[in-house]
Image 1 (cartoon, helix red, strand yellow):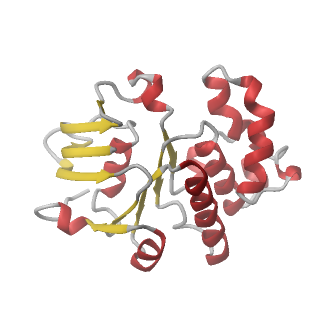
Image 2 (cartoon, rainbow, N blue to C red):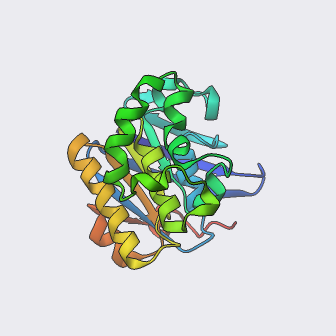
Length: 223
């Protein structure tokens, strides 16, 4: 279970973006978090991904309460969660070839030997072609780069996947392809999914249930 209990979080202690929000995702479940831009849902997603320490509240992953954040979180918890962000060009190192971008988490965790096998599996799964792997981010389209970022999120075989506005900048065909890639991965592994977005039609078609931001908070958060 991925559990967020009464989470309050922000970037200035006296001006929280998220106020006392609770949300759970069961193993194998897909949950859509729906809300307008700027409401705080991306901050909550970063808390769920162990990338941002909340000011208050608890985060529990598979029965273990999180005590450390970012690189201070235990490796077993960090690698249990894969994240795809809205803007691939802000989350990809422009110096890396796509092959190295995808393999980066494996190398960071001392699993270099797995790189060829995982690339062979993930490149076709996300809709990339082998000729793109030698290119750098500025040499590919936004859609191709986001496919590589999805592959990077899946390379460690996470039990939980967080997609924060993953398709917001993409066309309909690329959106459909990425959603299909996520669902194929979930069907194979039983991973849980938190999909964050503002497109109600997409989230209601994609996920098992949708949580409306206004229903999770007493009032709209600012920021």
